[in-house]
Image 1 (spheres, rainbow, N blue to C red):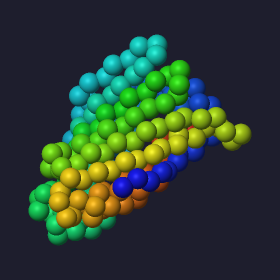
Image 2 (tube, rainbow, N blue to C red):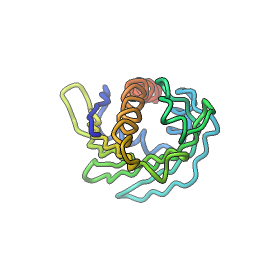
Image 3 (cartoon, one colour):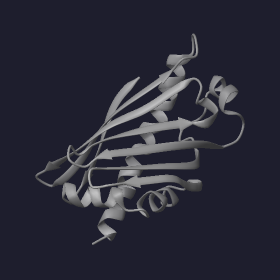
Image 4 (cartoon, one colour):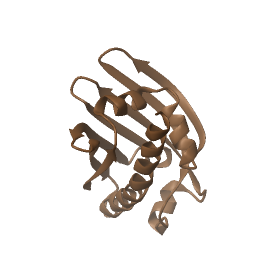
Length: 167
């Protein structure tokens, strides 16, 4: 399952990249989004690249189908890990998301490109969600994609607020 989304910013590409690189950005954003047990596992950065690995627990934004409950369990809070990688020169990045209860059967990744616009900047995202469960994998991938799509808009709004607060 593939889909695209965009986050628009009233700031320059360099300002957005500086926010993404800020050590407080991801924990602040995730707290504002209502995630729990937020932990930065690792952070690396140099002049050309940066990477952040974060673990957290998050609720689904849509009703979990019965077949998915078999894999996820009955808890409302699902543990996940996200790795954000950026190449500064190309202004391109990649997200890899692991939903812990589904890690052996799913692949969730997002290719990102940060581009200048007349109004500021846009992060163009192409998500690819795969699930290897026979017969129901497509349905599971669609469920995960719908959840990501619902959360993406709120994620973008929080990122815009955090960037505006930076001044």
